[in-house]
Image (cartoon, rainbow, N blue to C red; front, side, top):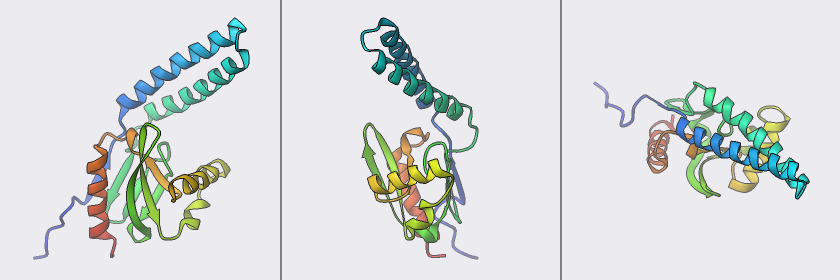
Length: 171
C-alpha cells in the first residue's frame, strides 16, 4: 500500500462574489460622480474619463460576477488560473520555480514564478500579451492572479499551493 498524499488531489477555489459585488457598487458610485462632473461643466474631461473607466470596470465586474468557473484549481498536474482574475491558463508544477504573495495597492497578488517566463509572455491575444508583459515588469513574473478575488484566505492559499508544489513539482 502506498503512502497517502499530504494534500487533496484537487482543490477548486471559487471566486469571492461578495468582493465583486462591492467593487461593482464602488464603480456605480464613480460612474455617477463622473457623469455629474461632466454635466456640471466644472471638470468635464476628468468626469468623462472617470465615467469611461467606471463603465469599463462595471463591464468586467459583471462578467466576473456571472462567471461560474473556479478562480483557481490546484491539482497534480499544476495550477489553473481563471483568465478573468489573472494570467489565465494552466501552469504545470514542473514550470513553477516558486510562489509568493505580493501586496499591490490594496490587493494581494499570488505571483507564480516560472522557469521559462518567455513561454508565458506570448500567451493569448495582443491585450493579454501586454498584460503579461506588465505583470513581468511589476511582479517579476508574467503569471499572477489577484488573490482578493478568491474565496480563500490568502496566507492559507500560499501555504497550500506550496504544499502542492512540494508534492507534485518533482514529477
